[in-house]
Image 1 (cartoon, one colour):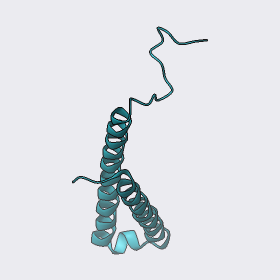
Image 2 (spheres, rainbow, N blue to C red; image 1 turned 120 degrees about the vertical axis):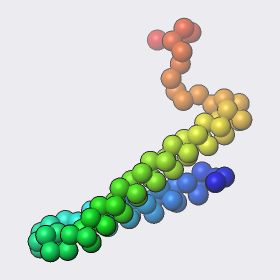
Image 3 (spheres, rainbow, N blue to C red; image 1 turned 135 degrees about the vertical axis):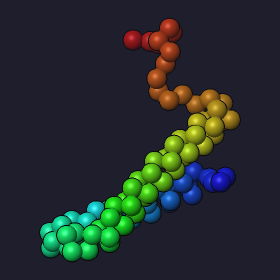
Image 4 (cartoon, rainbow, N blue to C red; image 1 turned 180 degrees about the horizontal axis):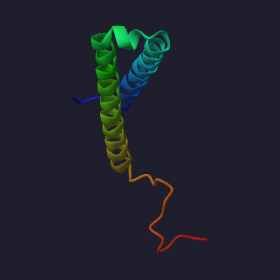
Length: 89
């Protein structure tokens, strides 16, 4: 998938909403005891959470790769961390 940085940011933000909403729903399940009565649904929610977290991490890594590639293409913008050899105090 070839996405631009704004596309990755949008996906990461949308996945964060899914993560937040799913965590709230899991809390609600546990607070009301539904996790004991609706075990399959509760496990399915955990699956959704795990998938969203995995996808978000993957998109974050891909975003960083795009940003590094763009920085290198535009003249190697520094990350603010020098090599140490010629850094000024």
